[in-house]
Amino acid sequence: MKKIFAILVSVLFFASLSLAVVGCKKAEEQKPAEAPKKGNMVAYVIGHITVKDPKKWAEYRSKVPATLAPWGAELVLRGIRVNVLAGKHVHTDVVVIRFPNTDSAVKWYSSQAYQALIPIRTQAADMDLVIYESTA
Image: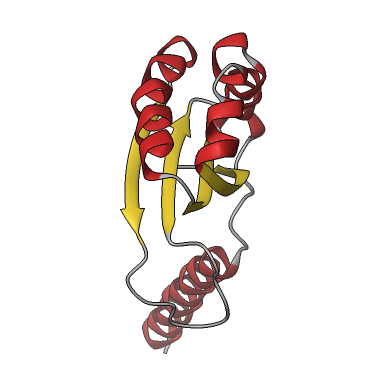
């Protein structure tokens, strides 16, 4: 009888231990994702563009890459709208530029080199320019 009791206690112990481990794992899975740390955030400058003067636009586009290099920025994409799947989107073109952080993006925009291009950009296109932060 003592052997049966010892086996039963052992089985119950291991069963409860297994359930506790499974419960902990499920609790971990349900934890909300931690917010990314501010220091690890990269910044994306996204421009939504409608070209007014193709010649001026070509001039502006050719000069922008030189303004990006000092800030560690990378031109990710330049594209032309194909379809608007939902909502309204008045612009025809887009540009995405990745910066190491928001501070670099703001300093690039405020730099003398980029500010010198704004009059050309204004003549060339209507543009909405926005900074977004991301972990990737």
